[in-house]
Length: 363
Ligand SMILES: *Cc1c(COP(=O)(O)O)cnc(C)c1O
Image (tube, rainbow, N blue to C red):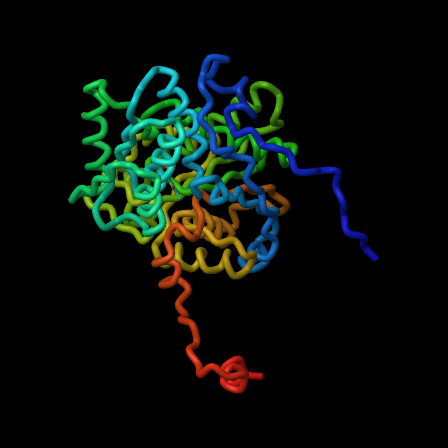
């Protein structure tokens, strides 16, 4: 008979990533901390998924969808907006596939700053657009893609009138690396492999930096192999050249010319890792599978590394007993349209009586 395992943990007031990891971040006692208590996201062990893909290892998902605006972008944004405020900036600007704009808009409103977001028209998931508008950002949709938006933002940044909070701002990477710290703190070790989606490639850069820094100060015993995945229609790093018109259902990684291209390659090379690509079909399959096997609802981009892991299992690249972590970068509710499409089923509409319901459920 097994008793319910109890722990001595109790709820505490998590202070947000800046205060939790201040000694590892470019902040001083004078830095005003603009936080929504981001970070401290769950690390969920998903044995059902592993069984379903016939793996023989431990897989933990870092569920970043539970950050305040529903994606990992909050980790970098708390720092970027705090540093902008420290410098006396009154406005922040970003280009975005959606989540950066949601996060920038939220933290700017908290800081009492103006926020301008530039989005590719018609290519933003519904939840993310709702956020930018709700938080009160000046929301501009350009008739172009993310790469066009980022070019415009870079040029506006050069005027010195606005603070750019895209991941070309190195402070964003600093904040985002705290997710790697949390993984090591919770596991009590670094994983053997870390899987994540790659879009503009800031996050793979950030995790690799975080894992290395923790190892350097003796808080992690090893370094994971970094496995990043792009969508096949938007895979400039894998294909070896910028993609003029990137296409994928995973809009968060629909990027043809990643800003952190070189550092993503460096993370893969230095860690004996890999940057690969998976098709939209594989992405949608993994997207459904993780929801149905373990109750973890993520946005489509997060399914890219899961699809990549399925390939790795098939190719027998994962040694038995490995400890693997994967970043689920954003919440499934961000993109309800794709989710409903991906689910491949519709509600069963019946007459409002018990017999009719019994009939469709086969009782
Ligand atoms: C931003 C984002 C990505 C891509 O991260 P990069 O740092 O640009 O590589 C992936 N998934 C989601 C949900 C995102 O918001």
